[in-house]
Length: 172
Image (tube, rainbow, N blue to C red; front, top):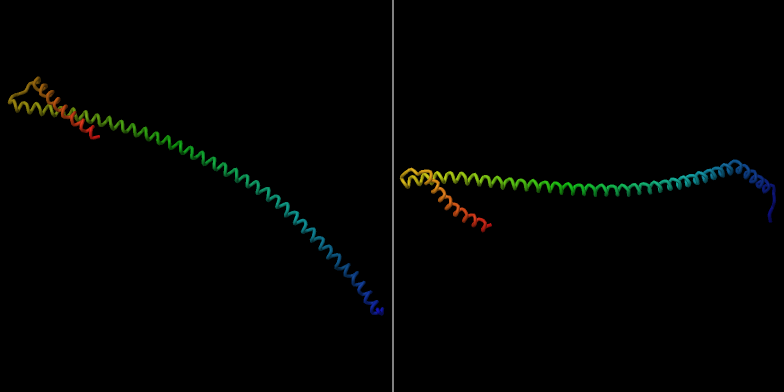
């Protein structure tokens, strides 16, 4: 069985003393260190949870701001397109009006040049008719004779020109 000798009793006393010394020296500081560490970890976890909640709130705010910014950008782009379309329509209408005015002015100029050319042609034709008539008749042609000859030449020329104009319109 068990033998309780002095060594056994001394060993028990040593162990008991060692237990109380280690408890006083190590157990309380280690326990305090462990409790402090646990408290620090809990504080850090709580702080992390608070930071996470704050980050989630900020994320929602930024998401809302981003959505609002996108909507504003789309509105601005839409307005810019509408303004550009309206401006291009105005510019196009102005260009069309300017083109119409230029075409009308060109037609007026052409008509004026045609009339001037016709008058010049009539004057040259009259001179040519008078000169030719006086050579053919071998005499001087008076004003009444020249007027009659010019009218007849103009009438014949008008018939020839009217016939060529009809051909021009038929070709168009």
